[in-house]
Image 1: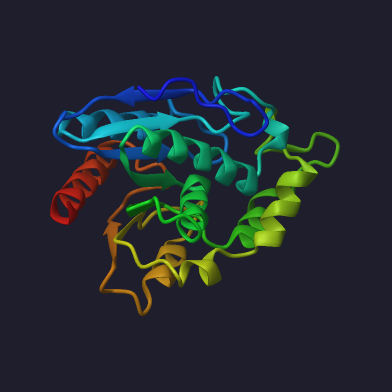
Image 2: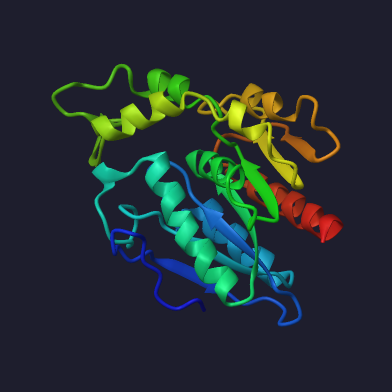
Length: 242
């Protein structure tokens, strides 16, 4: 356990810690995507199964999501980067060596964090968002202006700050060019939320440090049988790199 973790706004970040082998000081930190939380099936299953293989894991909910404190309407990629910084600080202070895995928007958070924070030793992107402005335009352009909610769910308001942040970032591709740590990208060929080309764009000219695994038939959430394929892929890659 890392004890209580708060961000700079004094909001408590809810997390679940799974202890692996006491011989390993690597810690896999797992972040979720838009409208998710640490108990999203893909996130919780990955964290649990990697721990069963001997590596300690921590999955968490960004503030404003799940049981973490804060408001969903305040959620942006930039704020989530700040949340991750506080988790990294807590982990490193206790002697852990962080590896970060993120799904969807959580993957974008990981990339932008790794671009400025050398404490992340390995990076894993699962159906990772790259073109943030285009994602926002495609998914939310038709939002009812009176309801202003994500995919019609009133529990998840589409805030002006979220839209502004997605447009200001525009694309993570330029900032990803300076990342030279080992990086695994996993993407389903049937992903209709984040296109496969997003991940493909990140490995151009970086094949010595970045590995792209395409899971044939998998959707954005790696549902059903594809969850196990994803976990096997991640576990095998980590075993080779560590």
